[in-house]
Amino acid sequence: MIFVTRKSTFSASHRLYNPTYSDAKNQAVFDKCNNPNGHGHNYTLEVTVKGLPDPETGYVIDLKLLKDILDREIIDKVDHKHLNYDVDFLRGIIPTVENLCVKFWEALKHALPQGELHNVRLFESDQNFADYYGAPVTIPVYAVAQNGELVGETL
Ligand code: NI
Image (cartoon, rainbow, N blue to C red):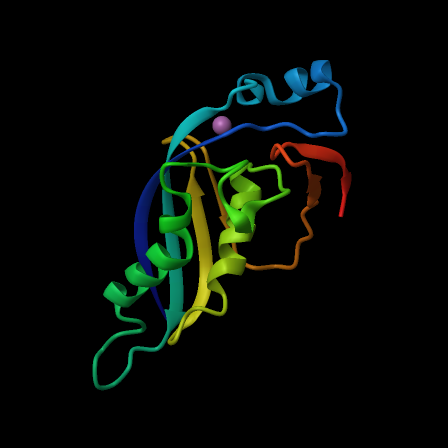
C-alpha cells in the first residue's frame, strides 16, 4: 500500500462556544477562542489517500486531481470565510480543529475517483493539529438562529 498526501492552506475565522453554556462557562472553557467577534487562523490541511499505484501511470491518485478535489470540496468554501456563519456544510457545529477534520472527511469520502481516503490532518497553528482516520464519530449539530448563532438545542 502506498500513501500519497496533498497539502493545502487556507485562512479563516471562527469562534468557539457551546450554546448550552453560560457566557462565563464559555469563557472559562474556550478562553481566547471564545472572543465574541471571532479570531483568525492560518490552517494547513493534509489529506492522505492510500492505494496501489496504477500500473500505467504509477499514480495512486493524480495529485493534481486531488488538489482540484480539495479546492472544490473544501478550500474554495472555507478560505477567507467565517467558519461559524459562511460555510453551509459546517452549519451548526462547534468549529474546533477536531470537528473540522470530521466534516472535511465527510466532504471528501465520496469525491475520490481513485484510491481510498486514509487521513485528514488539519493544523490550526504550527503547534496544534488533529488527525482523523474515519472511525465512526458523532459530533453534535446545533440549531442555528436566523443571525447565524448556534442555539441551545441539538438537531
Ligand atoms: Ni481558534
